[in-house]
Amino acid sequence: MISLFPNLTERLKLCNISEDELAVSLNLSQDVLELKMQGIIPWKLVDAIKICHLLNTDDIKSLFVQLDSK
Picture 1 (cartoon, one colour):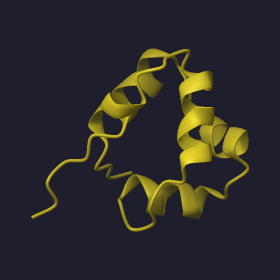
Picture 2: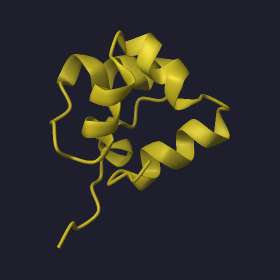
Picture 3: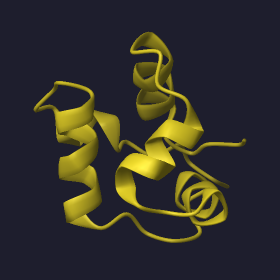
């Protein structure tokens, strides 16, 4: 999966959380998760908060720093 959120992707890897597990935790389909990771669909604050809880961090800002897509 191509991700515009490298910090989020790296943190998921460090915590051994797969994309499938993340999708289930957020009650999202794999397709919707992929669109969010690509920056096509924006993240909702509630999802970002759930991800922070899942990753045991409160640094929401750094997780959702987006790569320049140009």
